[in-house]
Amino acid sequence: MMISRRLLLAVVSSGFALGSITLRGRGARAEESDPRSERFIGRPDAKVTVGEYFSLTCTHCAAFAQETFPDVKKNMIDTGAVRWVFHDYPLDQVALTASMVARYLPVDRYEPFVNALFASQNRWAFGRGNDPTEELWKIAALAGMSRATFDKAIGDTGLRDWIVQQQKADTDQWKIDSTPSFVINNQKYAGEMSYDAFRKLIPT
Image 1 (cartoon, rainbow, N blue to C red):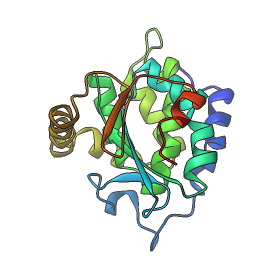
Image 2 (image 1 turned 180 degrees about the vertical axis):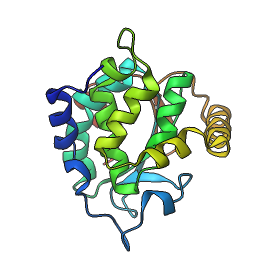
Image 3 (image 1 turned 30 degrees about the vertical axis):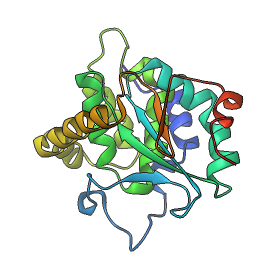
């Protein structure tokens, strides 16, 4: 499947600008960053921490990302009230591969890339006759990833095992059995929800 102009614009508007993002710190390259490090957005010292447990092939996660998360980011994260931590909880092999690729991007491209994958989920994950891995590569390339880095990401068995181990640990600790799930100040909530419903879960 060809990457459409609509998808290209969606990716660019998500923050990629075809690799023009200014990286945090001292300009770390994707190859030099630790794919196992915590991925989060928001102030490190925010009063409330939200952990989102998601699968990149989960349609409910995609709906939350597109319909609810923009308001959460604008009204809670960007204001410094909430620190948002991303937790991989892949429900299938395709989602696991996508999580591995996302973690090989520089940290400030991680969240825009995840949102772009959710926005184009029907194309890359569920398109008839598609090879999901090759579709992932096309989107990763738009995010500035080289083919060598992409191949390294999908072949990183250590990272694959780590994600699966983290998933098991999260299941044991929080009794997560569906996506999306959220842990807010040590309390678990499950399911896609509206912004108004989600807002009520955040302590004031």
